Image 1 (cartoon, rainbow, N blue to C red):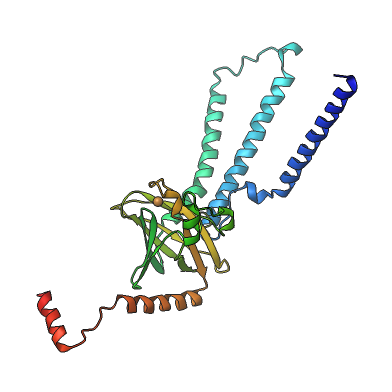
Image 2 (tube, rainbow, N blue to C red; image 1 turned 90 degrees about the vertical axis):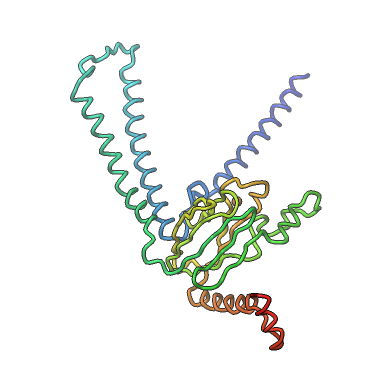
Length: 299
Ligand SMILES: [Cu+2]
């Protein structure tokens, strides 16, 4: 290989490497900080959890900067090649031992106070305005609005279900919200404290909507509870998934929550109540005779 050829190869390799580097830098510039951080969410609790995360991260960063700063400075300043001799006065010094025990304790207690406050709030089910029972099944969800005579199943939407079949020939990219859409979304009002009672019919599932900051197991024979209050101005659609490996179709039982304004929610709830009342009402006996027969059979 001639020198010129080698040179040409080297130049092309350099060009390719430069192009890759610029592409990488470009994507870093495009990724906003929000994409790196945890989502803030749209509920009272999700925002508190996010705030805690930011606070603890800040404390950790400050500690790391101070500790590593002192460490690196000492390593460089007092290196042996500069003739530094180890200082033996601090070995087994009670004063130092006390300081480096007390200071971390104070930091941990300082962190525990806001954390405990938020944890207590997460468990506080007082002043709930609406109760929704959520039951996990292999592989769908059932939502029951307690005391409202409304309940329904929520399963993977038809388009996703058709596309996911082996050899369906349907490009999943052509399906909107592939595997993240359902036939009957859960509908809740914004600005209202709602309690979710989570349970399961068969195996353990977990109900998780990241924007709500809440995820909890749905366990057969056991009722877990969480509460959610979406900000009044955060009307919209939020998506989640089952977050506990629950069998072969675990990946096919998404969660979709439509958050409506309280007025729109009332309209929806009344329509749903009317619809389910009609569907659930036993057919009236056609004649007195058939009514009597029905009574006889019942006895
Ligand atoms: Cu599941």
